[in-house]
Length: 261
Image (cartoon, one colour):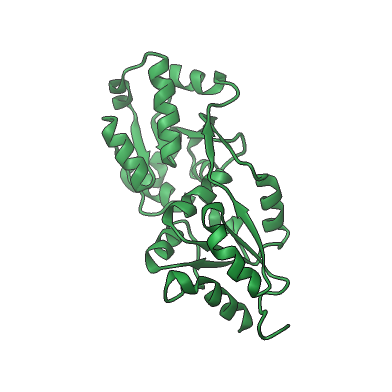
């Protein structure tokens, strides 16, 4: 490996909005760069599942919102079906993330639980602490508005604790890049490092794959953040950050130094 090109044969994943600024410098160190773009949030192809859940809310004990897109999509459909916000008072509500909390408060939806981290186990533990004992989770019916039909880690964790959790499609995410291609690269070891330059990018990647379990998705991938604040956001999703440069301009250099070592 050339001393001046320590990222030869390395592949770096970054958000599209910052790729123009960072890609050339990463390229000078020999890296290949893949990007993921800003997500386009759209209505689901079919409203049947979410409509059925809304019309049968009396059958649920909890409503869990993983992100702000789930809130906006659920409440938009809730209003379209001519329901009143006051009807949600009969349920317990769990809100994950500051944006999610703020949007629910602005919509006058009460919040019972706010987990301090984004991934599944802390969410289950926060609900568990609220109900008072693990046995109380057994038999609870929990609704989770999501963006895809796949089972989430949160749903599995709640069911392992004895609850019944329904993940219902409330919206879908669209991307000009194929998420399956990026997922295949990640699971196949084709990505060496991912770089975050804003807290929103951490959430965007989670929403791209409709998961809060980024630690699983990025197992074996070096994580770079341009400052401690973004590193803290990454940690809330369970990520371990190994690269933090002295300043934004030194990000590519810091990544190169990491792999040179």
